[in-house]
Length: 388
Image (cartoon, rainbow, N blue to C red; front, side, top):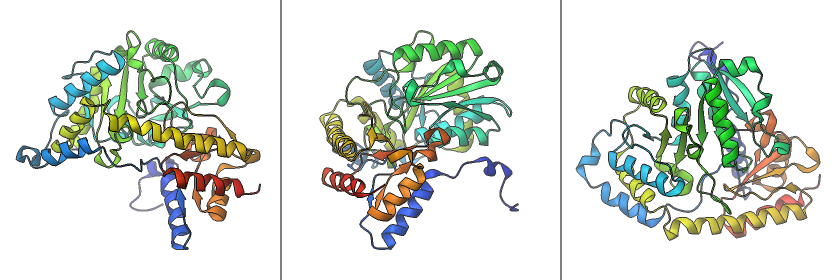
């Protein structure tokens, strides 16, 4: 046991993207022309109108100071206005909106504010690894909610044992889903809210991909009557506005839970750079800007290249209705890490093994639609050349 390493770190799974990056760097150093369809980081720049707003805001001396608190009121009002326009949800910007340094930060810190050691947290799998790591850091106990194709990649709440339900204090949902790209209906959210209310569970809906959709706009869990009694929802500007490096997001919903998260944050961070908040305000106010909506046409074309190309190569692929991911079954049901390693070794294409999102993701790979069309075609062609 290391002298300077806490035991709780041993409870964490290997962070998926670190290992992927290591393998990718090794391939690049070997001189290979690597096409990276791994980490979900948009390849297009932040829209110009947002960058221009940032350029103006960064010159304002008031933004050079600490940005303490729950976020600038102008940003929180913009969040409330966005949720009203998009979902028909009314929010009090003073108590029901909290600015975050990215939704990852909010998800990671939330358990510290709302659970006690030994409490159970219901974690979907396959799912974002931070649901588990945040729980571990807070001393909680994870109970896996398996997501399976036959249930539309939705958790079957009836399968949760009664003793687990009664010990649970927090439940994560994530729709549109990473990595499966599945969507949830408002009817499912109503069932989840009823379940959470019955057992006194805080339901957290991770809506980071809510604005990346090809057909029907995904709903908010807060549209369910009474949801604010037991729910918060986390949104991110990262994927919607190509702002992953800016680190700005927000949580909305139950005021008590948000106050607990705000208390944790006030002890651990000093707020979001004021200029970023001003730029984020402009982004949310103009969420239907032509530069923003045009991005989905780009992802649609890339999606079609991947889906048609892999199907022609014999892969089992479901066409995603949202996100910028394609979730595909591995050829002949092969181990996902072995399949990805072989594709990287033979064809220099980076994919994410489904098993990295937990054992329930085994037998699948995640493909990010984050390279230009010509490179996407090249990547699909290379993958098709692998003989299984």
